Length: 276
Length: 118
View 1: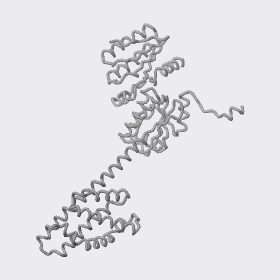
View 2: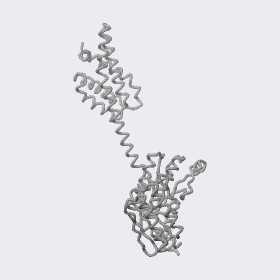
View 3: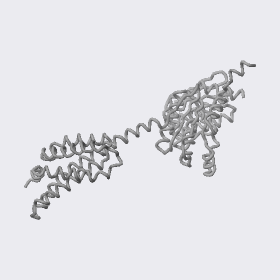
View 4: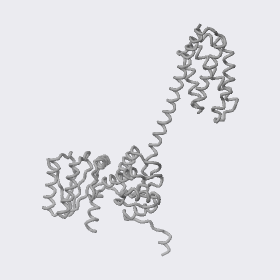
């Protein structure tokens, strides 16, 4: 006996049971506050989609399933809604079969065939979900990369690179490249590296910063390390890191003053000049 | 092959526009020192804008040239080191400590002038 026909014949029963069980399952993902009405509509759609899929004799017409999965994922609903929906469906089908078929041999065959129908949907679901997430992750990665090491020319011959967040080897490489290219592009004589937003400076981070500043010196510019917080100063000394090779300042403001001195300029107060 | 060394007042200008191999580099070292001795130049600018690659040997020669020139009483400034070259050098662990550098030829000359005056 083809299992699809069997499921279709018992559609009424299955749908009612499924909806009832889905309502019971609801608490599992109820931290997403979805109105009851929306939930019901979604459930209606869900079961329709499953039956549409079965009507296509399984496998061939998975278009509807794909669309539905994408929709759910786009709304940001939890994946567990879909998985539990399918699990409940399988359970309900099994229950109905169990109630009507008594022969053990038939029963096993039906079970197997039910699995064979439901499993492809599961696979599709997982594939779609992971694709969506991978896409999101790669988007965020590239966004993060863009934000990770900007070099800002604040005035002639002076540029600032504010660093925020932890620095790993990959990012350090990017920082170095952006820094050097920026120095050449802007013709910066002094570059201020601001580490106010770097939470931890360990030997690794310090090593990267020292390397970057040495490279900057090689291309013919100079580096000032600014934004050193007291606790960072403590860790640097406690770790025995030697930063004596290039100037350091506590704040960006002081760094800019130093940079101006190095390029033989200074900020003057116009009002004061007028008064004299 | 020889790298041309140009004299401009009391400075010597060198733009390296060929790929530096070991022999050229050694030849250049000798030529430059002879020239400094001959002209009594006070400052030297070596421009590396068109150099794509510097290996550890060339880097050592450049480092040596700077020290040797200092012995002859001439200050050397390296200019126009490219980002990629700088990164390679740093990766090789060569930081050319004590070698003055500048962004380009013009700034290199300015730097020399300042140091010689100051």
